[in-house]
Image 1 (cartoon, rainbow, N blue to C red):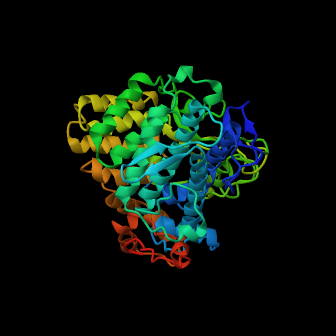
Image 2: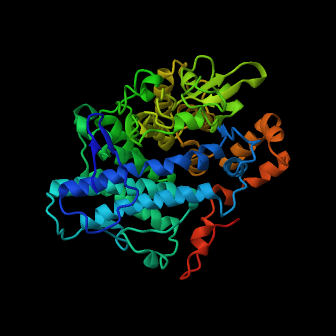
Image 3: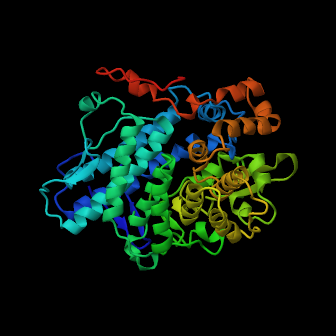
Amino acid sequence: MLAIVITSCNKIIDVAPQSNLSTLTYFKNTAEVNAGLTGCYNGLQAPMLTEWMLTDLRTDISRQGSASSSTVGNIELNELDMFTVNPPHAQVYNYWSNTYNNIRNTNLVLKNLAVSYDATSGTNVYGNITIPVAQVDRKRMASEALFIRAYHYFNLVRLFGGVFILTEPILAAEAKKVNRSSADEMYKLIIADLKMASDSLSNVRFSQIPTTSLGRANAWSAKALLAKVYLTLNRKSEAIVLLNDIIANSGYSLQSSYANVFSISNEMNSEILFAIRYKSGGLGIGSPFANTFAPLNSGSNVVNGDGSGLNTPTTELDTAYVAADARRALQIAYFGTGSTQRVYTRKYISPVTIVRDAENDWPVIRYADVLLMLAEAQGFSASSIALINQVRVRTTLPALNTTTINTVELFEAALSNERRLEFAFEDHRFFDLVRFGTTLTSVNAINTIRANFAREYARHYSQYYAPVPTLAQLQANINVDKLLLPIPQREIDTNTQLVIPQNKGY
């Protein structure tokens, strides 16, 4: 495998991405292991093609933009939007398959670095390595691979519950003998991976990060992701320690304006702790989302090559941005006039020469997330309101104060709304709503989604779907069971060794 790393643009990415490292005999030295690690960073792109469908589309910020279309792809999006997904759903399987492909990539790197997971102790351990790799390089490469693996498993457990834990590359026949693990077992692995990454990766301040390392996972991104894991598990005190450490010592900070965070001329800035990176220029590694999210039948008026009109902002989200909120102009835009006017998601749109080849990175962990996670972990207090205000003031909004935000319920509603507006179309909202059921007392995912169905029913669900569902039917679709997606039916049908249990409700 020949890996060409684009260092001139600080993109940790391979011009010819390898979605599968096919042999355990390739890795012979540091350069070749690093090439394999580059393939792991490349492998982050494929799940992103469908992640927004499984997250934001199933919340109150996004709706199906082509609901009246009878194409298979749009029917699949309708099913996600309305919570009528069935186990054979193609997009659910695509996300699953692409994620496990990249988990395999990380396991190949870890295998060749002689790093293994001890499920009994819940730790990763170094064994005897057989290739000439300096220990400092070994620890760095292993820890970056562990971060990527933990990121994937964290997404899987939140979307599917307990799934298959694979910590080393195995053959297909062996894989069929591995059954689902519990969510607790998965979180044990995720925490072990992120602890080793936090302890071993560079913890220099943002201003001291070498240009060639921008875009790679570091100790701060690992600690931030681990803090979110702890928050998801309602282990707030452990999250607080990590988040305070990042705020005090990482050197990361908010950008002066919201637009600066996402500018393609300001990538990997002080607010981006980790992002999935893209590079335009006809290399095959550009972002597809400018064309995916631009309005349908807009020609080249919004982006070269037209748009698909997907991941459309809900009307309620649009109106939730008050006039003074500087975030709205970057999040939401309109094309056309009068009755043909269409709303679309603007955040990932930049000029493209080649269709589906934009420059825009996709942020995974931002400093604003660190601040708002700390407010969530601390709960209702003056210091938590001050953390929310750090984010609000950057958007030119007036600060909240304890005179108006004077109860737990008002604080939690303000925090939920701030996260919704700040991280719209970054694939946070679904995970936030589910997590709030544990970490907050007054924000409920099911009630929020049912309320969204009610708000959007007259102008969307009753207009574009055939047959037209009743509002009662829509609201009945979402329940505790349906907060998890089904295990792909293909996994169940093709396993001749084990009976794979399906998630409840499917």
